[in-house]
Image (cartoon, rainbow, N blue to C red; front, side, top):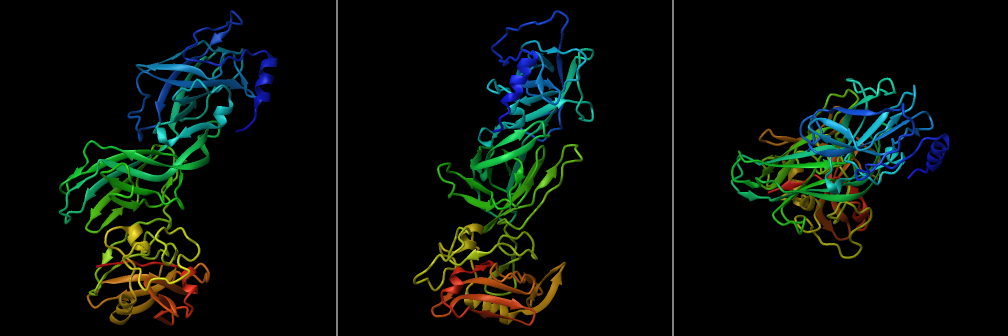
Length: 484
């Protein structure tokens, strides 16, 4: 936290009486009979997207204000963290705050009120914590266009406009029309989100130093899916930020004691921004769970950007029927489109987090469909790594055509039934010749030779190994899953 205590000593020396305002402290000191008290009214909460419904504050709530002026941020008489009571659209200061003569004063506000915010430091770094699911707001004296305005002794009324400091994530969960199963999920969980951070009110609500991770749980009143018309809706408040690299997971369960139960899938990488509503459509299909990219409902602010989707997620692909013994995924693990390279994984590591060999002695001959299978672990259901024979079937029974989609090179693999998949030349981290070659992991291992891999480049494609039984165990591979 920043150390700016000198500001407050300076303010004291100048002669302003600094008082820590509390909702329990009705005492006030009037230092001059002609001083003009500050008046407060609320304009609006910038339009709805949050658990706070409507465009006004919750009824019978309290918010806090700071009023100061000048480059040294001198606090006006009584203007340090004053509690404001809000009821029926009327804001009432808990104590009088007196305006200096002929001085422009900005007023800053936050919700909910906290009596412990004893100095201006909290305007620079106000703590926010996602585990409380508090819909934090920040505000300032502004005009109808949300531009900062000032009060003075000749115009003492400040109109405070609030903005949302958090983003809202909504999961709308249904089952596919051809899924005849019945599901009961009383607990909807959002896992591995940022736990806490600081909010800089003076810098337009900038989020600083997010730390820790948290698991959030919603308990919807309607949690049974008997037919495709039923829907489970779960809402979460999250700290704004890009989720790339965090692998945020949606989990649906009938047991709150363990997140390993029920169904899980990764939430597509999203740049969550303050004041935005992100709605994800979740479809329970036979054998897998599909989470769509977010639909964004924006409030009217031209400075807010749109959705940024990256490849660092576990969005589950469509199963393509090529008329073979298994169906093939329409894109790589970690990608969100057929041309996406996706992520790179160590053979035998089901977490996707290892950077070195999982097995150093006596690796199994086949991990497809086992507890060591990254596709089975992350895509749930019937998805798994392809075996050596399934790769050979894909090679021998389909037509392979080197092509380019956009700027991405790879093979269009077309079956006799006319269906096809695109396999991009995603290289390996250790090779880094992206667009020139690709190395796809199988679940098979050959003693003396190593991990069996699908190797592709423009002049050919084949099933191969490194010829070194240890080297392939520590390489990063792309993964194209299959299902029965």
